[in-house]
Amino acid sequence: MSTPSTSLDAGRSPGILGAIERVGNRLPNITILFFYALCVAALASWLLSYISFDYINPVSGEQIQIKNMLAPSELLALSQSLVKNFVTFPPLGIVIVATLGIGIAEGAGYLRTLLKQLLAITPQRFVTPSVIFVGVVSHVAADSAYVFLMPIAAFMFYASGKHPLAGIAAAFAGLAGGFAASFTPSSIDPIMQGFTQGAARIIDPNYAVNVLCNYFISFGSTFGVIGVCWYITDKIVEPRLQKFMPIDNQPEGEDEGSLQSVTPLEAKAFRAANYVMLAMAIGLVLLLYPVDSMLRAPDGSMTSPQAPIMQIIVPLLFIFFAVPGIVYGFIAGTFKDTSQITKSMENVVITLIGFIVFCFFCAQFLYVFGQSQIGALIAMSGAEFLKSIDLPPQVTILGIIFLTACLNILITSASSKWAILAPVFIPMLMAVGISPELTQASFRISDSAINVSTPLFSFYPLIIMYCQRYCTKTGVGTLVSMMVPYTVGLLVVMTITLYLFWALGIPLGFDSGYVYPAV
Image (cartoon, rainbow, N blue to C red; front, side):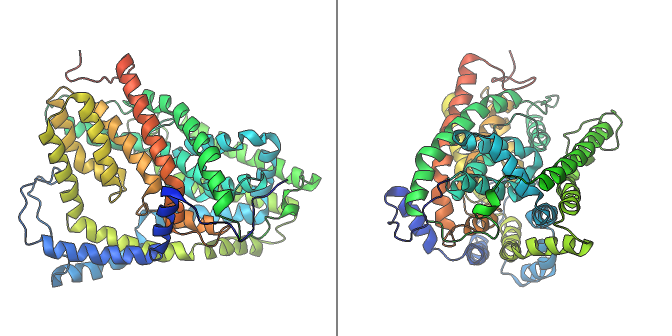
């Protein structure tokens, strides 16, 4: 097996991507970057609080007035909510709980055996599309997928003689693209539908939006997403990494010996663990099957945010990693007693220290950014500008895509942006004959593509941490420069897919069209 170069004489990366990497890596540590962003947001709120704006917040119905976050009362409020902001920061709990389960499976050796088996059946030339495909599928696990998918993808690439950071990049691109290109519905669908339907009823009180109104375009986009990410990984990202990003660190246990074939005892333990996982999966399906299942929403939906099954995805991930890991560990002999189980959980949490520190500052920044209404002001001013242009439908939709792309650099939460933009975009475009379903589809395309290349994305520090397991000099600029080609590729291929569907008259999803009123 040939491994990526580990020489230290790799040259400086040239071109635009090299410039992005160099500039980005000169930035402070991403945690300090968010501290600076917190200070800038607070200072901006003070300056903007003296200016009167004519925009109306579509969520509250009130005129937007920037709140001075440096006022004594607001500083006191920030102090009072400091701990709450931190402990309720969504990525924090998701990452820690899911990682505890992964730690058990990893400490037992179950994950390593799983990877050996995957490598044994996956031809080397198909490792890249396989990782991207899994990334697209993994979006059903929501944000938890960022925790377990990246290290697995990195090791699969490393074990196949490819650059491990290219594996992380491919998985990241497939997962982020999966929010607008997917084989299956996900929890984001009912969230989007709720905002879209509410906004549409501003114009038409009886308008109904199907929760799967974008399913066909989402499914159709998967083929282009996998293809373009495959090309970008193998032809652009990995060759550049091989040349300019030498591996200078080897994670413990990931040596040539760890890639040897599975022993008979490991195979026996692996079979037993898989049987247990299969039994658990069957049990879950049986619990979900009845229409009145306690895991479904009151209306019988399994994908609604009110459905308990959607609310327990992270605990399920913990269980589905931990239980097979424990079974494997005791059969294979890697776990001698229960103390080794807790030790494996402790060991994996140590790797999250940097991410936990980041979460503290990021949570405070998001609090200040949201409470000051700066985010709402940015979104509304951009929407009003687009409205004033009054362009043809095809150009207007393209404008929605580019405006969302710009906003997503600062506001990465899809639900937060759409809560503000839907009441503006949907009625505005309905008035000129564009359907709510088409507007929602254009928003989702841009939102998912930009996530991979904005440093303000909540999981950026975690992904950088995974990269540093192999390349210790990985910084913000390294990751951004790796992901920019994917952003361009995803935007182009998903936008083309949308316009092809539009030109051919293929429905965007169930009960959806392109014009309003429907003809």
